[in-house]
Length: 432
Length: 173
Image 1 (cartoon, rainbow over the protein chains, first blue to last red):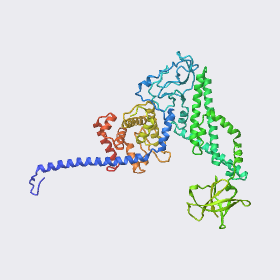
Image 2 (cartoon, rainbow over the protein chains, first blue to last red; image 1 turned 90 degrees about the horizontal axis):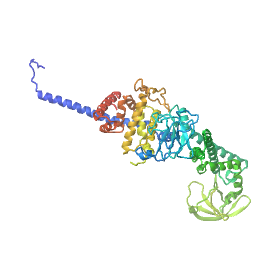
Image 3 (tube, helix red, strand yellow; image 1 turned 90 degrees about the vertical axis):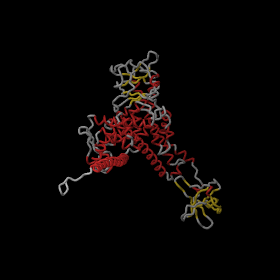
Image 4 (cartoon, rainbow over the protein chains, first blue to last red; image 1 turned 180 degrees about the vertical axis):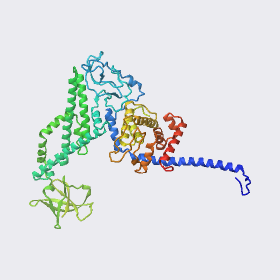
């Protein structure tokens, strides 16, 4: 570096070095600040982006439901933590010497005992063969359900506590209490969904059940409406049962029928299971029947939950399947006749007979009627007594009392309360 | 923590976190849903006790991360469909080409751009980015969680940051 005279410039080395160091420090500081700024901005952006992708609450519920459906575990059933060695120690390996008469089954097929002590969750492959094992210490044969060998099970039928590595494979599950269920639904629905698990299938079956119940309710309500029109009477005069009550009854009937079907289905499965067994014992029968009714109960609960919004028939629907069978049969046999005696028992109120009231100023009041009949007035909202008047049906008349109403909703129509001596009820009336 | 294994509580507490981590790996809602279900099934199959909610979350994050890595490594992981149920194009991951992203999806909006950048990252960085940027975890905690030296975590984070900056145009986030 030279000046105009080509003589070297005198450089003060110290300030230059300081400047360089300051620059580097500033650069490092700036880089750090840049990173911090980037981190803050990116963090916000990533959170916003991921939060927007979901999942929705519906997705969460769906996954939750399918998770437990796939594993066959009751949600409210507490499980035992893996550290609880005592719980595992209680589990015989297997509890009964399950390798017994397998009949014609392949040698590789293993057996597992259905009645097991407290077990958190054990996983088996779906069964195709059902046979019976005997325990030398137990006199009666023990009911068992066989399963194809799992990767975690050895030839003696013992099962590792480690789950199989292939998590997507269809499974058979034994839950606490020793009831074995075959996850055939999982398998089928998994296939239907292209191996993506049971989500769609469960949704579909539930949706189908709801649709079926809703359709039967609508059909029943339509029949009631048509029969009312045929007899030339308003629906509220035909029967003391309102259409909503009829709809509830229809839902209950429908639920009972479905429940019966489910129970029948469960029983037939149980029968099939028993037929396959080489020799059947009472214990085996009861276990199989329990398994069948268990599935029927589950169906009934789901159906009742689905039917609840349409009408509170869930109480009836939740009854045991056996009890429902009789009721369902009775309803099917003479359910259509039930409305007739109720209609005969219904007595029209005075407000339904005497439809108008003549008051002293020459005006006329008519009763306000909704779908349930004449509307009544709460005595607490009554105002002053206005006058005694006569209610008429066109030919006959009867004494009544007319009262003002304290709270008026506004508008041109003035409302009154009318009481008949015969029943003492205050009926809502309006001037016309 | 209670000795009782409260799978429902754990599920409700951490479902979203697990789902979003899986989504950031797989780029598809359906795949994220399946992966999330698989992670919780794993927990359901092998119940365990956790010391705290943080411990729960850490376990689930690591488990989900491993599950997604395995899924992406598997030979059959070649997605054909690129449309989800709503008709929105979804990201495509192709193991033969590393983590491939449908380029059209990246241009949808700013959020997709950010997600695209994360999805394009090598797998080594994804869980780190999720834990650091989304969960707000410290590098030391991430090191403990992933059983990796803290210096390695910091170096990887620095590399990931550079890649992200490059993806997002330098100074944009």
